[in-house]
Figure 1 (cartoon, rainbow, N blue to C red):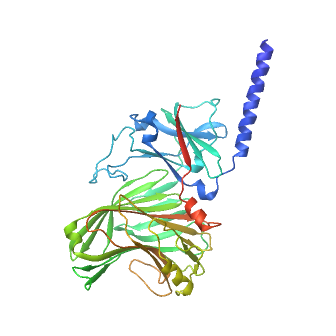
Figure 2: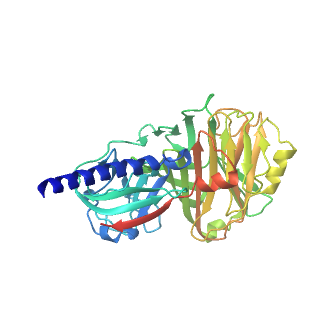
Figure 3: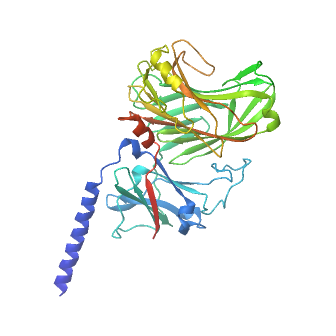
Length: 430
């Protein structure tokens, strides 16, 4: 009877080992378009964690048959829905030391692993299982741990506040220390050529009291000063203080947060328009764009007319003019630029909190034109968004996202949606 029990145990252990290996074999690696997506789990979706000390929580996944720590961070948010910063005007939504419904757990999609089946030793207590399901239906898992002493030392994003330098395994960007709207340098690791992107361009245009007295402000007058940073292994956030002046009168004081992910860059702009000061400006528009550096031969497509393709050659030809005239839908507004040199970038704009204005496309293709804040002559190309019809008063909220890849393949109507879509997520208490 004892021998039978031993044989049964050996057979069962062998079965579980082989089964686990087979499961791992049939789950293919994530595709590049998905691997470095930042997965966000809301605190409200994991009730069993609410009220627990943040310092006790960590994440783990099955790696080579063992439950191992993975990089993660927990971001806390203010009552306005942005990442919280101490000393900023907007207060924290919850408890600074405990898990709240408004807190968010962040990890990378690629770090999710096979399902834990209770046969591996681990440090700490398992609290919850996070199931992710990719576009092909494959399931991957991450586990919330309590009181685990183990932490991953992997940093997907590195940031030096003193130097204004952000580095990931894919790109690096250096900001001007006195104005984080100005890029002193930008590089992409696999790009074939010199610096691919020249500058971020921001322009505010409007009439002062009358549309006949038009004023245009650009990177030389629009200054965003860093006020704080949240440095994490998954995402780094910088808080900026951004003021807009007309005739020495501050008409807008905006909160700008820059989020840096491994393959993404996001500008979150929020503020309130004072009615009296807004009345000084007639028919205002704001333009946000990226000026590239001599991407001759690059192609430009947009969500409004994905079948049309503009080719960068230093002049706006008939095809590019058609792309411009197609415009942009404020709620479906991707722009895809393919350099053909191991760098594609996709941009998107999202409106927040009921702010909903008309939008048009900026596309410039010019060999010689220069703008303030640029290091290289020419707009080759300069692509972005013109936001119009600003409200007379109230909240303004805009998020501009830039995603980077060595190259996107297939139908842009499909990959432009997939690139920013998160997997299905289920959270189960344990």
